[in-house]
Image 1: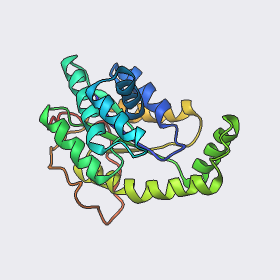
Image 2 (image 1 turned 135 degrees about the horizontal axis):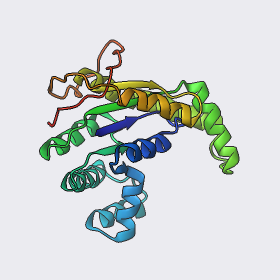
Image 3 (image 1 turned 30 degrees about the vertical axis):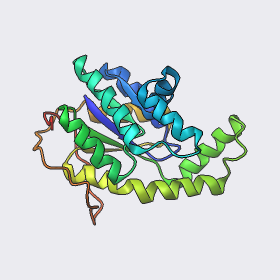
Image 4 (image 1 turned 135 degrees about the vertical axis):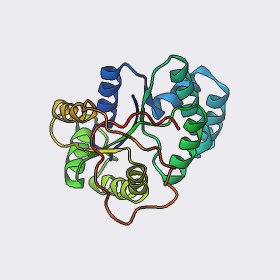
Length: 220
């Protein structure tokens, strides 16, 4: 199982990624955790990331991509797949991570897209902000985050659909209900896969249909 998880803010992506990874016995590659781990351990990538953070800049995509590639290589050495959570978020990142994964035979079998409408996402994030005392997470801020997500991530979802590996699941309801839906889709009998070149350099013009079942057998 090699899976990329894509979902809007407020969809409970981290919870579902951890549960999927545990169910299939693969590592949960969360980019936030990777970044913090490298910085804490003082690795070369961590020191490079720290330099950007100390300068008040975003960590460059190249550094995050290399961290993800290293985690994928470790998974391959262990003979397992992965659940990638939090990356890629843009078409450029998707193309870059595909090249990295293809170089070691670890491209994803499936891109799982959790669908949550904006009003539900706003409701969840406002509730979390209140529970965790985050006064800066106002409704206007949350809606801007969602707008940015749709603008930059929709082409990534469409690109995975064009490659034939997209599985789209309703992300509303309780965490357990969402997990049940996700596992039902991922545990369906595998469908034949034709490996096609990545088409993430251009967005689709029509909303793609979700691909049924778990895509397997595509290593590059």
